[in-house]
Image (tube, rainbow, N blue to C red; front, side):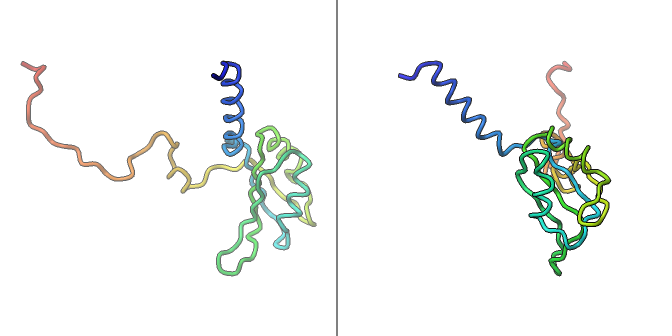
Length: 137
């Protein structure tokens, strides 16, 4: 038999581990005007001064594999992301002034609607009925 205290600690630990993959909404930042020569490792090194980073992604052209001059940095904490925005926006990085802001969801993300609402994925045909409802008698 497991005590109530043990159950609480096990469920609490599970929720902590699960939450590491669900980052807060404003914990992803957008960095633009990067030099084309910038590497993800140099961004990681510069931006980890503000908190723990989960991922750094420089956008690259599909065909040439060349940098597009912007990147996304995912922090594990919203406060860390805000701190990075406050300290790095309009600063010089690798010889260029960069602009840093909180990333906004893209057009394709959630199809432009919040995850819990919006139109159905397939159009449903409403059934037309000429029957009179029982409540109108």
